[in-house]
Every structure is written in C-alpha cells, then in structure tokens.
Length: 134
Image (cartoon, rainbow, N blue to C red):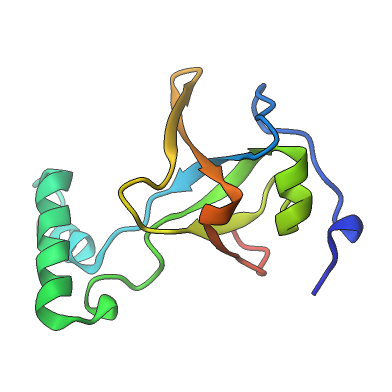
C-alpha cells in the first residue's frame, strides 16, 4: 500500500480548514435499487426520500440481503478538506473517494456557501477507493 508521505496533500477544495480530527466530505448520492426502479417506471413521479428509506429498510429486513437494496455502499463521498493529523493517521488526502459507517450518528451536517457537506471523524471511515474514477 502507498504510504502517506508519498501521497501529496492538496489544499482544501473550499475555504475551510477543519480542526485536526475532522474530515469534510461532499456526499455522492447513491440510488438504491428501489430508487432506480421507480425512476425507470415513471421519472416524473417523485417519492419522498423518507418513503424510499422505509421501503429500503423493509426490503433489507425481509430479505436479510443488503444486495437486495444496494448495488454500492450508500454512504460515499469525496474529501474536500481534512485535518492534518487525521490525514496522516488514515493515509487520506483531499480528493480521495471514501465510504463511511452507516449509523444514525454518522456525519455532522456542515453548510458552507449554500452547499451541504458532511463532517466525519477518522474512525467513521470504512474504506478509500483505490480507483481514479470519482
């Protein structure tokens, strides 16, 4: 695995410098299979996200198979700013695509210049994508 010192840290993509333990992420929306099916059936009909979340949970509970609901990890994003110590500890740089834990406490909403971001602690990160596609 590539070590942190060989990965060049980039400046934040927004004018924010997080405190040392925080990672600021721009979330990438991942549609569930139910979302995709609904959009194919009738793209003009909008189902509230709470209803989709409830249907996703019901499908997950009834099948016990996460692949019945998701084709990709649902909580992913791009690091846009990162605290120095957490960058080094977890070998992360600005621009990395990451996935994080699915819990009700995961992530803190951050609003900056009318755009939503997520603030995460390093221990919430599950993985970093090793591909270049973002």
